[in-house]
Image (tube, rainbow, N blue to C red; front, side, top):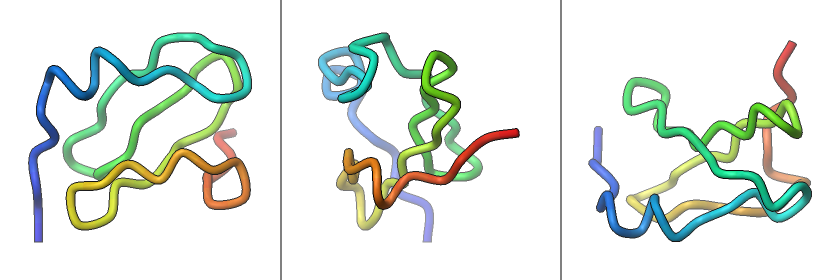
Length: 58
């Protein structure tokens, strides 16, 4: 199930580790922190902004 995240919410969120802006990957339902090389999941329309839940990017 794909749930679009509200753009206003996306604009307000930052990476909890680097405080950098995030980019939204709608296909993967993730918020990407290029600065931290992490992808934070979005579950049921709710961003999970925990480092332990993030996927490491190559």
